[in-house]
Image 1 (spheres, rainbow, N blue to C red):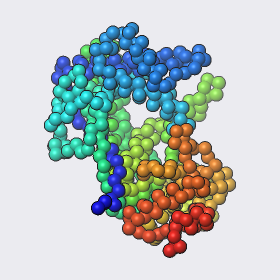
Image 2: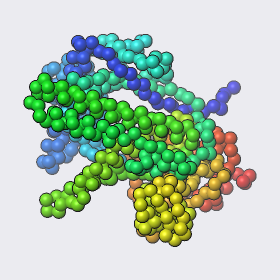
Image 3: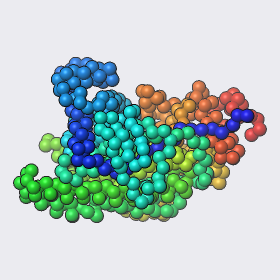
Image 4: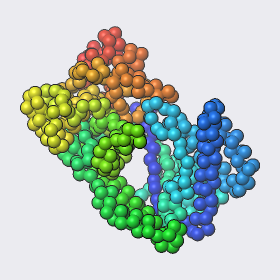
Length: 494
């Protein structure tokens, strides 16, 4: 008898602190240095070709041929295992693909420096035993388990092992080992199915939820900003590469690590609380790199309020909104929830009651007063309600009939319709609500709108499957698809 249970692939990483000996530390640095050399050499050649106007080879085959030439030129590359070098080529190919991807808008690959955080990856040839791992041409490496992770079991099949170095060569280096695993799990159903919430990220208040909850940010860099400035002043007064200069560099590196740990701890706690209490989380699709651009301008056209904009950029970067959205995405996916990204335009200037949009509605940072209907509320909470309303279709996915589905009305200056970006056959729990008229598609995985007839069948069946898993019967709105397709997908029982 065959089981009707559906399984999905669950990918998870486990990170531990590595404890290499002095000899192993030297070998690991040699591996990382050779991988950095391969990356920088191929990148430099590509930049030379680009400046000369020649065709730019960005395929793996051309990079492998270049690697053979580098091994002939630098014989010490043959002392390093081939897998980390080949994985470096894969990373460089992927970096170029992201740079040429219009949806991602990623920057071009850059050169790696010796003191930057770097790593090497082994996709095979490793062995895991108790609290140590075996790597080819390196040997057995022990890793440390804290009191919290001593009982932590690495579940699933280990697909790759990554060794990472943080801190560089300033004496504050730390080694980490991470295991990428895969295992089959039953399709999760969120325990809070039907709970939908919108989140408005900000600087004064890190996150404001549509239900009135507020999460304060750690403001880690702001907390240690004076200490950081003092250490930088001490470093500037010392002779470069002297012992005192190295001590100052180590102190700055340790402070950087502390700031990152404080920020990461706060974000993990907040995102875990949000993902456990809400099945669908709606956030803005922010372009943070554009929001934090410098306002200095040029010599011919100098910018205005440069110092104020620089301070705002530091505060925005200190909040780590992108990292928070990333953590919400995978945590909701593990629990059976959904992360939705919506258009961020006018969420702070629109009234959540009458939908009137005006810059005068928000006279101060904290207060929102509608100039048409007089609705008064906290500005961040009002924006969170608008964000939640823009993803009204998500409530149907989770079977929430307590709130009426609202479709944003047409407004001047905005596209006429909004639709769900859906990839047929995809198991991803991250979706985007994007304007229908906007080109927001991928070359490799084209984004398809749910209103296209050829994909409406797959889209609606995916929605119905999610309802069956949750044990609810809500159906589909007829406005999503044409009558012939509706009759074929949804029986007349509705």
